Length: 94
Image (cartoon, rainbow, N blue to C red; front, side, top):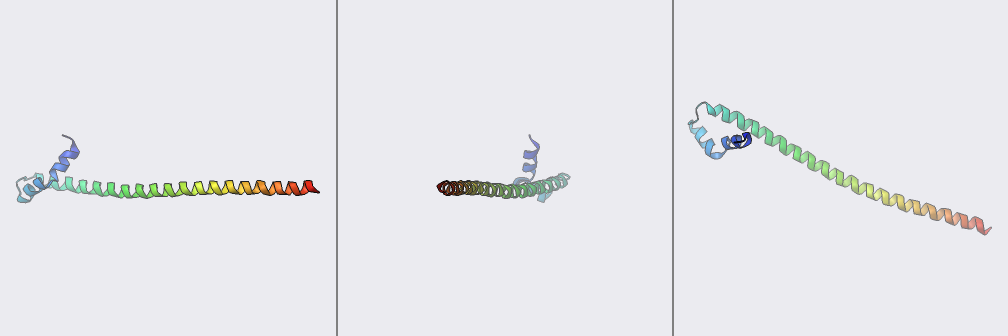
């Protein structure tokens, strides 16, 4: 049996009821420490999930900004080329 499932089993409601009644004896402290560690672990996992979700959202926003900037650059480049062509046409007309 994996350690995670053992800890989960210790923290389950079924075992919690036995622990509260004192039928585990010395294992009550083991239960308490495992559940405390497991609770801390779950809190850390949830915190990191939120951090990663936030970072994923930032990545999406930055990709959208990069795409918009590329489109603007392309439009500016085209406008610049048009201006150069217009200037050349004016010069060649004289």
